[in-house]
Length: 446
Length: 161
Image (cartoon, rainbow over all chains, first blue to last red; front, side, top):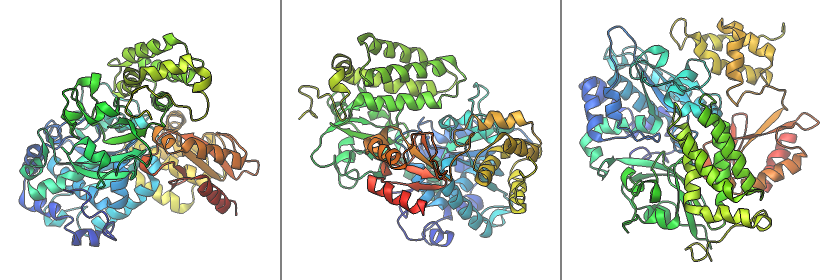
């Protein structure tokens, strides 16, 4: 079942003519000509579509929070600042089929009553920004953007805004600050963007994948979308698969397939690279807890784990994780968990905006202490120190970057403490190039 | 300072960019225009930032605080080609560390340095959202993916011509 990537391999799909030949922009016509904005919102609510950027908050509900005071402009801002390590699905979608996002932007802007919308794309993806701008011009030329779209009286202008290289701008209030030409410091909430967002006007910020899914929902109805998936995990999800698998790439899955199928089926990752064994997975982008092979494949209750929001989080952080952004990083037995955790800790240290002390100071501590362990200079008490610092960051910051920084460190120690200890007790061995600790009796140990 | 002026064509583009935002919200054009400035002058010197401030009728400090926050803006002179390689987890899993070591050896410089001929600068960056196609680096707008030592050599050879 493919919704977003159904036509992604059709030659020329990045052009509006080929896109329209393959059913593109029908949702714009249907929404604008035959539905009211509230009816579109109602279908999105019925679909159960949840925010695909990582938080998983229901999109229709987020839309319904949008304040609509008379005479005040409302804005839709697409969050295309994709920067969570392990995640590259939005990059792929916009690069290959830009009109899929633009169609969704028109439909969603119509539902929200926005007459100006922005797509905020991370600045590194300047080539994708050029692709989007070309596609937007095509949409203007066809009368799908601009004044009086398809003769309906509805006006919409759509612009692309480049970021400047800051992970924090993926947080919606930081993104809005950035779009206002400022440093990307997250705002205190409330007020929420739905009430005071871009230039203090009511604003909805949604991820690329979420917005792109709305066209299909308009065309086929919210119920049809909700019929795909399991429970509250409805529809399809783009999973960015990287690491030690045979076929890294972006896959659109119906939510609800097993993790085992996703890793081992030829339709998806195709299994672990030849001659190697699965050791660990980070299932939803670098911020979600890493799990060992056993925990990712099977829940504590002994059931096969599914690719859903609920199943991946079953067992809480003790044995579970999160679907997050769908950044699925697979590691085989050659992976040093301490080194991998160091790269994540360094990432969050680098990307902390510096506004809140627990995050600004704590991410630096974690980076330094893990580095100490990784380079063979660690002390046994450093491991508990890391746990302590992680705990003190979590929940104590304005935005979720603090949590995102603390979870991967805490989880790596929770599930691979022996590996950290080995670095402390065997510094000479552990610092040899390519050296990796082999847990006795583990499924990945040869 | 006097020679820091965008070409007429870029100035037109600046006007168009400012028109994307409501009246009085021209500060929103800051990031797009800093990108244009960096493309024009390679790096964001204080003079360049002052010029950007004047274009947007904002104070220079408003430009400095933004340019120093976002890592894409070079605040020191750089070489002709700035190679920005991704050092984050997934690229490391794909053999990034070895490839980047090769790159540094090949150019004879460390991260943050520029070759003596001014041709190449190496910078280390965080995740470029191309994890499944790693290891990855970017030179200006172009992404170079699935890097190997051989591929790095080819790219450097090509750009050295």
